[in-house]
Image 1 (cartoon, rainbow over the protein chains, first blue to last red):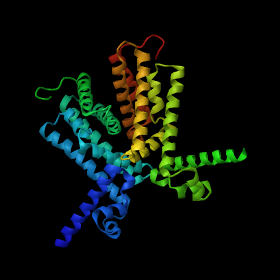
Image 2 (image 1 turned 45 degrees about the vertical axis):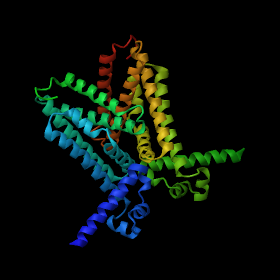
Image 3 (image 1 turned 120 degrees about the horizontal axis):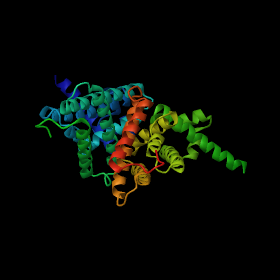
Length: 202
Length: 202
């Protein structure tokens, strides 16, 4: 039993260290050697927990993506039609959300030419699109709008990704206040295009 | 004289090989060893042309970015207010444009925690935003709109980046026809927000 706990803890520690390295210094920093150094153990031990760097990156990507989906789910548990809060949950409004984007950028670069990574990312994209489309359906209602909302969800996540990229590399031009005003503009546009939100929703 | 030509040719060849490797297999594929193999020369020769992988990537990034700006300039030489054609010049509508995005994704991942890369990318972002703002000014005119058009340029490039990312990783969901319909939707929105295009413009 203690052996199992130790194993899980060590594994968790190794993932956390690798993730922090990627967030801070980019994907090249997360070498088995560097992780071992920071964890204070041998490269043999680090290699034991992960078949290779590939598996390690996949795990870190999944953790960032699950974290983002959890934030969105928290929003929707409270208010299932709150598209503005969903966009806020995804955008790099604070350090943890900014760090998620660092992980995603690192992953996209790796996913070019890597079938497994590309598939993983495609699956995530479709899932986020579906979630956002569901929020729009809840917010604006209407029949036969599934296709329309899916396209809008795709468009919204594209805008979020591109804005996040600019905000990460140019925080001066895109501070948090500007991210908020972008969300407000999108909110107005959505209402104009899809109708007035039913009473009680933002 | 021939010696100089040989040097430039070899340098060009090395950059081209590294770029093709990144475009096809991601940034990890572009090792000095691999480039030397494909160029049919020693790693010593490849290393001679580039201080390190860092410089090589910077050169490849610059080439992709300059290529994109050249495509936009070609559009604007013909029709200075044609924002739709600018967006088409940037989006991954064909293989060469798609390959540019592969290079950018690879670079963003590297630019996290790399001051020189991050600065390079920030400069490019601001330049593209300024170009797009200029196109909007030409197309829709109006006084005191500099700030507004700069924000719109930022927003448009964000949308382009996010859509490109989705199109690269999910070409099935975002085929070229869908990219064209997204441009058409943006075109309508811009006209609605900023006014009717002066006669003679699309």
